[in-house]
Length: 386
Image (cartoon, rainbow, N blue to C red; front, side):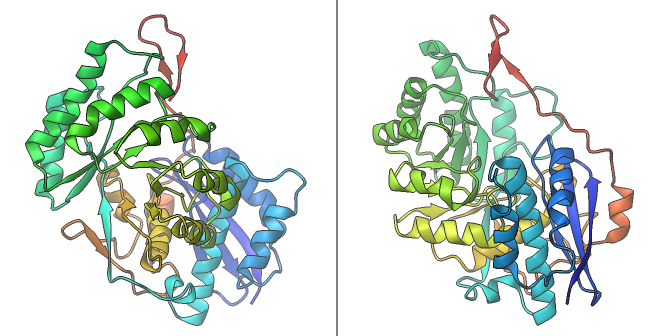
């Protein structure tokens, strides 16, 4: 079996799907995308794809090495995201060829269902309403839907190097009201998106401790691991990070310095399915849990579920539960994923376990233009971290 072609599709709301074709008629799908940069990743996919034509798609480790090590300049979000989507599609082909799910080729499943958590705001319009009342309403809606774990974004605006006590109290009060509304039988995680300074993050975590968050995600930006260590050592709340790290090499420092309790590799950014499995194995030696990052589409979710199924230190899977069900496969999959009481059953189909509705790729296509929102200081309008 040989690879004959690669095709890419920009589809709503902001995703890039990849289809790899073979001379035996078996095709595989992947999701190579960076949020807001899908056109650049697409060019990288086709540039790297030239190296794949005529190769055996089942030689996944060899092809990964070819794509990653075949260039003097390697790594980074664009190239590794392109490789990630390609690698997913190769596993999809190999699983279909050998008639088994990907997780069976990675050691076999260790669980029958995958615990997932949604973003708290779901399908609400992006109307700028981040009031406490909206947060509480959304959390109660998620609980009614059967979820027992949600994640909310705090702070939900740009942050100064040090905020006033009143501003800190305002942010913490949102979490406190959500906790009061849903009770202690629902886990609540907080995603900070790296918006705080180290000093501010420590104050924030200490203020949240009485409300028992499940974890705090990216309290500070990812480049300075020592800053993350300081935050971790100053709080009892578990710290999670990793969505903006690419390949096992970038996770090494995070783990060696024991900066986190939970690693969050992204199957679409960190190097693909096998690379995330390797990162999970590294994390296991440090007693770290794995909660794969996934704010993307149904192919990304399918890839994550394959890793989750066969990873012993898996903790929970991010599943945004947004976009009118598109992220679980509505419109795109012949059989969309179903969530029951906060769990998705381990897929049983071959490869990634999904069947793409190819008509939808044309119906849902768009030009690939999606701009990442910008954040500015609320007083002096200087640039702020996303």
